[in-house]
Image (cartoon, rainbow, N blue to C red):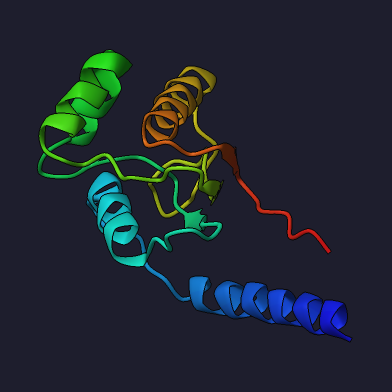
Length: 146
């Protein structure tokens, strides 16, 4: 009974997210790193397993890291820049599941060019590893294990 209720709760959450996301309008800017850092400070549970679900294209375009800088700077320098401004979350031992990744920031949400997607993936994997995450899954869709 508990297993069935857990599965139903997960399905209900996914459906609620789908319903909500269908009405979301894209914004011109994003502040992904700061959002992750703030969430990690506020919501991390000590002693328990932390699982972070992120719905985002993962294209950083903020005051500290404009999109042009994000795609033009080497990943190590970019991560050092984020560390300097305390924008790297503390995710020690957390599981991170990113969905929505790999699409451009336009309303059409087209897949990114291969090189752009590789740069994006390499950066965020480096970021999450530096943040201490144990498991990182990134893709355009999320798979809910049943």
